Length: 70
Image 1 (cartoon, helix red, strand yellow):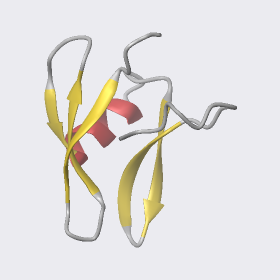
Image 2: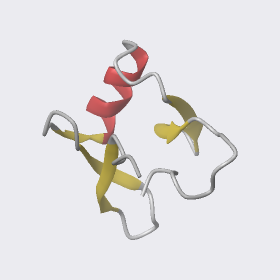
Image 3: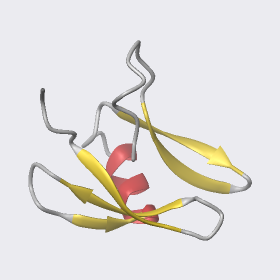
Image 4: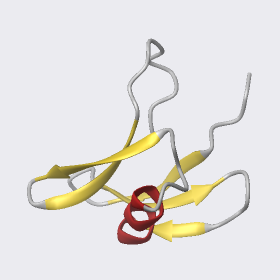
């Protein structure tokens, strides 16, 4: 099984993903940095949703329930 590209490394008390780790290149990013990278096209399997007024990174949907951001 292929390794996930991005792993969530920190969540807020309400469960919002706040910090991320790119398992391929070793980069650590906060939410806004990851959003910027997605918007620049550097993470094609992810997109940005505005959730409760904050841009939030999410993985693109597919048939598998096992590869969501976590």
